Length: 114
Image (cartoon, rainbow, N blue to C red; front, side, top):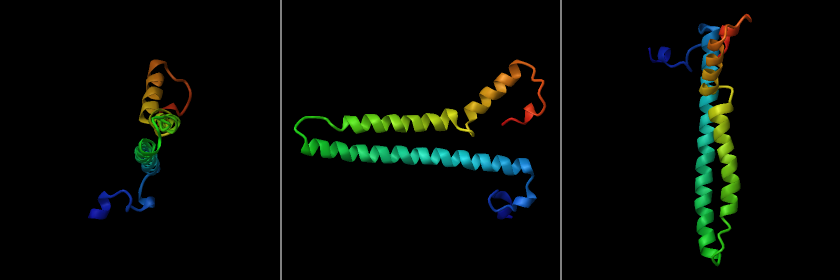
């Protein structure tokens, strides 16, 4: 009975095509978010270590601000891409649905958008 509740143990052939697609999208979204949090954690640990090295070895010049700033820009861009610009982004999906609701769509298959 436990196997029926867990979507990963369910046989792929027993799922409908839309269920498989939804599962793949959810899995991809979870993976993207996990990689971002991993990146953020590594950034925080390395910056703490660099600050400690800077405090011990430097004579007052705070050089750690440069790697913190540039790597911080990279982490920020990674976070923005996961939250706003990814294929599986919930925000992007809501915006698309809102745009479709504003004006009547005459193209076929528009209701199949994520």
